[in-house]
Image: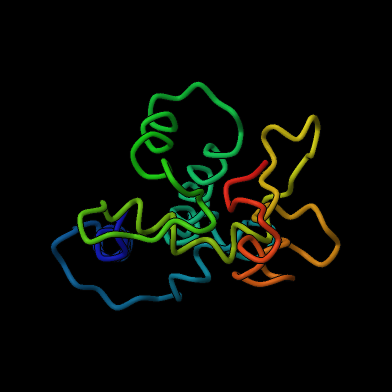
Length: 155
């Protein structure tokens, strides 16, 4: 969800929690952050919607790599990633906010998504994290594919 929606939902939840009326403005007795802590840490276990939303958005990123037969993944590969991959796709003005959100999470996704080389057909030579130094494109630079004559989309 867009951040504005999440903030509005949290506002309604806070107002309801403190006054039993989502329209009323009450004085908070405890910080919302503290309420979102697990019970064992002194909170009441409410979900932090911003973090939960980020986790669910990262799951959509993961689906792009998981080899699922999802229609959404197939559509993205055909329309968004036809001549590139997730790591080098550039958001375009006509792209949806969710796609732009997926692209904005690349730095975090790179830390969380690893590469299993296997037979090499699903691993990206330039973009996947199969070297100790990180992705080859980061190590050699963007001119590497041209200098070495290895296409950017190589597996």
